[in-house]
Every structure is written in structure tokens, then in C-alpha cells.
Length: 440
Image (cartoon, rainbow, N blue to C red; front, side, top):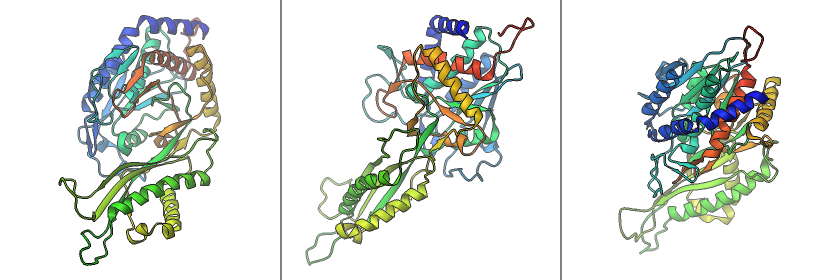
């Protein structure tokens, strides 16, 4: 492996411009998710064409073709998948090795209305940073996976096991139906890596979370004759304060699992608040309606139903101190599916895989990659860890501003990730021998 390490290092230097160019091109193809629809088709076509060009057996399929998808317990209805295919490429091994799939989402969040310093689809490079929507989350990681396969191909390394690169649709905004479709349709690999941006941290577990809507209905007007009015706006404000206190309660109830440090706190976040007639310049009466969206995180083993039950219990305990919420109770409904938190488990194969990831991290990075930890975010890993036989590790590049203006990927981390992925592939899938008994 020491010889291979040097060859991989040399390849990433020699082929740096081409590798960066691939990531740039992916960023320059908009693939925004606009529920219930999305614009992934063009980037999926690019993935298919590119992987076919480097020797992959490419599969492109519509989600409507996947048997059992819409009846699956974890399928979320209400999305339109016409013309939004999943894509994966199979890079066949010579046989006798373990298989690995890199699975990432093609869709990105909306570019937003805020001002970008560099265009959201420019793919500009400034001070070692690749800017653009999806550069960090998660086209950069997907490009690194493809480049790692190319690296081993061009170095003449023959693998025993198959390598798959899968690009799924509709992960953002609580989708994950594309990932579920992949688990039902295939590929069915021995292990998976999800190239979500982890800043080169090894993440065998990820958080969960969900978005809910709270709607308030009061009594509007101006009390000219002693009418009893109920301000939905005031009730919503009080509920927002209750959510802040519920965060404290939630963290008293649930201790962080081993993957997270003892000072890790589950977060409860207000996302949007709306009340009153916003079409008018002046609002002269008590608002009759209000609504807010909020996000609550969870650890592995927690469910959305469980969290909301705890929230209602806490709500009832607070009512004597909050009269507004006695007379104006919210209706709470989910905005998206609850994204389950999950972990890879502790099977012998998972232990072997994590050992390989740690060891190859030393070789590829030239330093200790650090301990395995849990992610600070939710993702679609649960579709692997909970609903398939393929455990999924989350491991991806460094950068900043995911889901925000001026999203970027750090290009130094991109090169390191290509090297790391190439080492993981070679070690996990196994290198075949030629007739003389030499590993190729």
C-alpha cells in the first residue's frame, strides 16, 4: 500500500485540473429541488454520460419503475417524480471481493434570494475554494468518488469487488424517496459511503430531525364594545418561547449516544413565523391567524411521534403560566417526513470497514483523521442503515455555507478526499493479482 499511496498522490497532483473541472461542471448544472418537483434531470444525464465514458455499466431508471416503492413504510407521498431519474454506474471487479457504493443526492436546495459574491452556478475558484450551489453539499463529494475510481483505473489497479457510484434524486427537503428507491432497485453493495460534507470527519452515525407547522386561530378585531379578542400572533410568540424551553427539556430527557460528545445538544429551531394581513401597509386589528414552522433534532432510536408527544406533554405543563396558549392552542402537523437518525451498527464487517477507513485515512492524509463521531446534521443515511442490509458511512469534503449564499468546497480537502476514497476502494474491495501473483 505504501507504493500505491505514492502513486495515488502523484495522480492527484498530475490530474488536479481535470478533477477540479469535473466538480466545476457539476456545479454549473443547476439541479435545484422545488417540492413537489425538481430539476435534477440535466445533472443526472451528465453523470450517466460521464460514467459510461470511463467504462461503467450505467443504469438510469424512473422511480415509477421501482416495485414496492410507493407502498413502502418509509415512502413519503406528495412528490412528482416524472422525468427525474436515479442513476448509478457499476465498475465491475474481477470477482472474489467486497462491493462498495458511493451514494449521493443530485438535488440541491434553492439558490435563495440573498446576494451571492460569486454566482450560484458559476463554479468560480477563488483562494482555493470552489464556489456554487452544491459544491459542498454534495456534488464535490460525488465528483471525488468518481475521480477515485478513475485514479485506480488509470493507475492500472484491478479490483476484486464491484464499485458503484449512485446519484439519487429528491434528498433535500425531507425527500429521501430517491435513496429508498435505490435500496429497493439496487445496487445492493456490502458497504456504502455517503459523500455528504463532513469536513473529512469519519461519521458512522448521523442525527435525525423533522419540520413541523404550528397553526393558531384566534379572534380578530378591535375591542370597541368589550369584545374578547384572541391574538393568534401573541399565542405564536409565546409558543416560540415555549419551544426554546422545550429544547432544554429534550436534552434532559435524552443523553447523547457514544458517537456524540457529552456536551452535544439537540436543537429546536424556529424557521418561519407569519401572522396578519401582510398585503396591507397598516395592520390595525388583532391578527386572527398565525403559523410557524420549526425544526427538532433527534438521536438514533428517537421517532418524530415520540418527540411531538413529549412536546405536547411539556406544553400542558406550561399552560398555567401562559394564558394565551390556553385559549389559542396550535394545530401541529408535519411538513416533511421525520428523518430518522441512524448508525452503522457494530457487526464484524462494519468494524473491519471502519478500521480500513481509519488506516487509509492516515495513508491518504498523512495525519491522524481523528476519531469516528456522529454528524451534526440529518441526512438520508437511515434509508441504508434502517431499511437495507447495507451499512452507510458518511464521509465528505470540507467547506462552508451549505444551504446558504457563497457555498463553497475547500479544494485542498477535495484532493485529500479523492486520495482517501481511492485507498478505501483498493483496501475494501481488494486488489486482484496478475498471473505472476502481483497485486495490480
